[in-house]
Image (cartoon, rainbow, N blue to C red; front, side, top):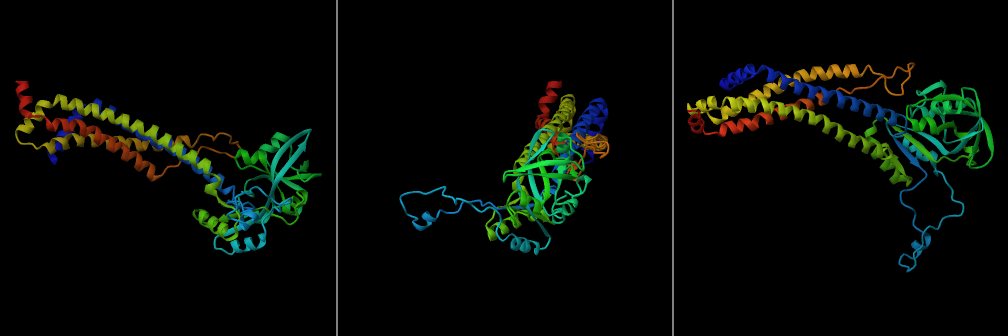
Length: 414
């Protein structure tokens, strides 16, 4: 094995410029792979954290996945006439026995619950109307299932407990309305009637949909404005282990019949976008490493062409084909290893620089910067792709050199 190593080292030293270019190509590919995939991984991790923590892990609503069977169809299952869409004149909306359901869920280990009443609300200020999604909450229990209390920028969520006429709005909505802490906003609901609420808190989650289209009021106040006393239509569930979300949702839905959506179902569209984004990112950055492999292929192909006569002589004096192949594969591996080492340093330095850039939409007060997720898996994957492409790029010309008949080469040279 020492002979292939010494020959490979001699080849690389004799073509230092080409060797350096190949090493730099691999290093650039590895560095870009680490920096770009780390940046996208950091963005996705941040978005998932914001998205998951800002919302309950499981949401139980007063809906059902499958509509109930029609009474007439149950009475005459084989009737020739189909009956559909027969509904009560005044359907009762809300979760029945909500207290019992919440008590049973709260008794489970690692589970916190909070009751809510969701409804549409129209905010009126300075002659303009703003349609929002209003959520009636118990401030103390809601703080246990979401990060809303930590997202407060002004005022406090707990103020809803002491001020029945309070309302908490998003920072983006406050800027749009020109409202500040302590201002009064006229409110109208679909149940009819208007009232005046005072802004007791302003929050910012970083998610535009929530910061502009969602407001919070006290649960009893929401029930009064929506003309639905003692009614709740959602139960928010927070889990200590979010991997149990599907399990808990299936258990709740099977036991009580109400639709229970885990966070994976609620944000399925966004998670699908992340999968597509990963395919594009890994494909584009991985192609850079494949292009670097062509540089290795080029240098080894050139060496094979230039050293054809030397290879023939070594083969004629008894050097086995495996040793010839090993010589050039060692060259490819050597270039790949040097490129990977340099690429790791380049990628780590690039990631550190990217982390100093301010994140889009961040403010100086919050000091938000871009997040880069640097994990051993990313470094290992970059090294694996680089070394694999290096070995393949070296093996193709090495295989050709090993199969060449030494007599043909020597006769051609003479």
